[in-house]
Amino acid sequence: MRSVCGLVLRVYLSLMPTIGILWILSVPDYLQWGLVTAQVVVIVLGLANGAAFLKYPYGDEPGALELLLAILSLAVWLWMSWNFEEWMLSMAERPTEMWAPGIAAILLMMEGIRKAAGKVIAGLVWTMIVYAFLGDHLPGVFEAAVFPPTKTVVFLYADNNGVPGIVLRIVVELVLSFIIFGKLMELSGATAFFNDLAMAWMGHRRGGPAKVAVVASAAFGSISGSAVANIMSTGIVTIPLMKRTGFQPKYAAAIEAVASNGGQIAPPVMGATAFIIAEFLEVPYGDVALAALLPAALYFMVLFLQVDGVAARFGIRGLPRDQLPNALRTVLSGWVFIVPLGVLIYFLLGLGYRAGLSGMYACGVLFVLMILKNRRLPSRAEWHDFFIGGGGNLIPLLMIGGGAGVIIGLMNSTGLGFQLSLVLTTVGANAGMPVMLVLTALVCIALGMGMPTAAVYVVLVSIIAPALVEMEIPEMSAHFFIFYFGLLSMLTPPVAIASMVAADLAGADMWKTGLIGLQLAVAAFLLPFLWVYNPALLLDGSWTAIGIAIATAGAAGLLVGRMSGLMGGGERLDTVLGLSCLLGALAVGSATIWLGPENPLALIPASAGVVGFAALKVRRTRSH
Image (tube, rainbow, N blue to C red; front, side, top):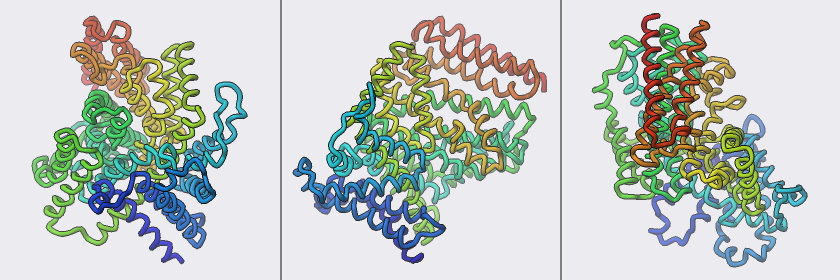
């Protein structure tokens, strides 16, 4: 039984990326198979659902029960795919052969979500399902429009606004492409290349290994699509190096966690979320990548300065140059990892191709270059890791995608989405925009805990974004606001998955790591509030407004970065100066809010912030 379960699991895992690749490349169209997207995505979901039972068994190993559930999971979704065309004409009749397997499909999917994505996410989806059936008994604004049970089941099971809706389509047609790209990068040695390049560039500087972590995680994290995957790829090198050169384990773990999480906001790929944002906003991908550029630059500038400040406080020097890779040799040996990124950008921006298809072309170029570089075809173990490992990475994303389809579909059908927007809008009207934004940020952090980057966004976008847009916040600003705070759930205790994984690698206390991570990620907590009031920070405005936004935000970032070099050292004067830096950063960063986005007077506090930063740097140099 064990061997049978293992075989079925391997088949399921390998079929998931295979079907996705064939669909993205439009192979069924070339073969003249009349398939629509919903038919394909539910098959991939069924495979993921079945694989979840076999990969996460009830006991130590999968047995007959898990095998039966895996077969049933695929069967019920295959049934929907097979009958989809016919059902579109008879949806209103809701025959037994439509809703009975629908009940089984939803129950099996919910258990798969619990196994693959955790109890919190499964609980959220279950709450929505219960609300859809019993919400008409609730009072006031939370009273739901409840439909007959069979109609709700069929809606979720077979309607394009239910499980086979936009979220699952995005996961299969878009995110899957970049999961495969990231996996291929990993197998081809890109992680080592980015680490070596960062080491050659930054390793000799003060606190060098920590700065290597920042640079390498920004580069690789944008592609990987997962902060945890980024930590496990770059952190296994950078964390031991940081500890060896003098960083305390909790600092080494926190720096890696914050840097890896920041990779998800770094253009051009942004963990594939840039393409999803473009899809929801119906704008060109280039607009999203451009909007993300300045906030990401500020995030890493502040983190870099904070790392430098921590290294200065503890007297941590860089590594000797003779222990570091040669930059030129590193580039010459690893150019094959840069070319596919250029190909990706060319197809996206130059030719305007779909993001998923562009990702596939980049994968193809990388695959060919990898063969030429290694002078051999991939080994059996590498093929196994690519298909089986890639399929394993897709399981939680696909299960969460199915759950997100349930949430979005039921929020629309019950009217809860409108009611939540109304509540948040009312809060904004009565208590003011700042209170509404803080409440929204807390909701995003709470709902985003434990979810992969792309899944965080697609769940939050339908719940939170409409309320922000209703308050006349620009759409790009609203979507970036929820994206950032959903992503910050990875660093925010008590869950803080990124901090937890990094702490485990470093042998550090998770809570101490999480608290230091919050301090290091302070820029990400502040920036979204700023661009809500001044969209020029997302490069949306006149050249004057953009220039002033860069000056004020940059000066504020310098002060925040200097804060970490002062606080925590135990000296009262340093603590006072550190708090002064934070308050000064808030005043300088918000200058465009209280003076106006195009008011040149905002450059005065910006200049004062730069002078203050320089004075504190001189003080730090003299004290050492």
